Image: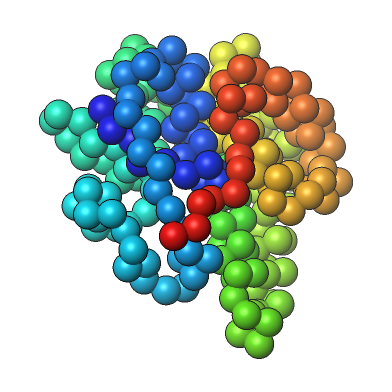
Length: 212
């Protein structure tokens, strides 16, 4: 299987953590992609032909297998969980599935806000919207706080997709924007400090994206 990646993307990290947790890292050919800082607002025209062919969405991650090509982080995680994890990281059905997806939705919304904030920050000073940046930051804080107050107490011993997505959201916020998020969710921050020591989290720590 071929997986298109970059070290800064939290969506890529979520997939890579799933791969590590399932113990299937040796099944993949990891293809590094490069992105200019204009990626957030302009069409990237320097994509490699194989990557462009794999994903008309032109986003990462993208997974290419012998039978299917998937170009969405959640779809990839769902596929890996079903095909290689016996539904260990996300239940196939029932109340436990919906509870997990409730957390995934909030943590994913948090990640989307963080990435949109990053894209706006990459604009030039005269084009940048301070109001939009503040709106995305407020959304991040609400999402962290909601997971702490509504869902953290239900986190079990299994580092499942809900916890993985939450941990990746906390980790990206910390790496990209600093520790400010911790004041919105101090108990979640304590949980993250512990979970960040897992081998799957350590081996996938973010780094800046190579430029085109």
